[in-house]
Image (cartoon, helix red, strand yellow):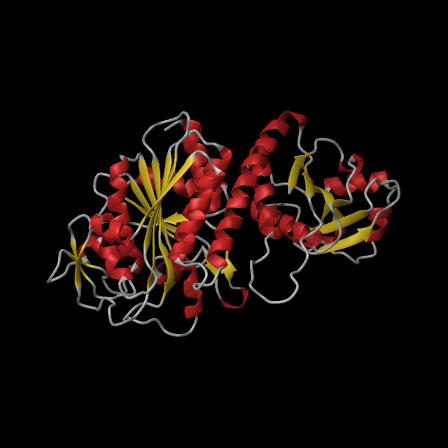
Length: 498
């Protein structure tokens, strides 16, 4: 997909289709008014008939009006005249989605923008590209028969942007293009079924990154290597499965920039039955999404390499299945982590924290400036925040604040939850150094407190993406979150050279 910025009137652009906004009651947006003047009021006369009331995200494709270069005109409802970032993105997604169902190959999009304080030129370009990528995404289904043809749409021109802001908007397009492609990669990985997207498959896809980008190096630790690292918690989770575990290390090294890397750690449970503490059958098929943290890390590493950021970044992906069998761990078993901490397994369905704690200990060898883990860790986080916000917990409030602010800029929102010492006290065990669960109360936070036990001396944040990484039910599928948030976080770190 080719993205461009325009600075003049949309009526002067040579494209197949012009896209303009219409507000409640058929009121013309500024761009639509310019089109109306160009075609001697024909658009205004059409809207006065009341056929298109301008409700948010409604669309109507019309043949071209007189004196326009474009052969078609797409009207997009933008609701009230006060346009928020959320309503602008909804309208843009609806517009791109409508275009993708036509034979239109190129379009100039001139929707009413939010105020510059809410969406400056750079963020306008980045958000436009990210939103367009999301709207054009097609699930990588495995249905038999003829696949639907790819959309004809290949060029989108966004604006109008003041000439003084065009360079910033174009830089935003470049960053949004990379972020959008990363989100697509995450979605493709997460949407695959568990019999295709196995730990070995994730290792293969990670290795493919090294073939694409000379700046990336990948090592895959096999079961014998994992055992040599004394990752007893990780090995305990995988021992019930016939699929071999993998511990994937993805290193991106910049030619310049700070030496201490940022380490991203992604939970890679490619299918989670709950183990002996078996999950309820309803919606268990959605447990193929339990590797969304791993998918986000792999995708974000591709974004970093695509943009050539002046940072050193390491991605760690512990990946395995959590299955019940005669070899599987049992409630009451005690295992020893790579850090030497013993853990009493009270619930085998609390497995994500077990593989992550060994990965967090492994991260120490890189002497990182910051460590961020991503995991579909707890249903409790979904109860607390729903699907709208990612839960953030940290042992460093400044790091947590960075992530939350990046989520606001990227419209990929997160919310900081407390992580005070009382929650860690709930993990006491009579038989081991700590238990892997602490009951229902504050379940998302006690999971974070478990991980915090393994991060002393690190600047660390935990992101629980259980609610935000995928949608269940009839609309089942990966959302690609939080790739946009992580892209913003890393871009700002690169800009500050921290």
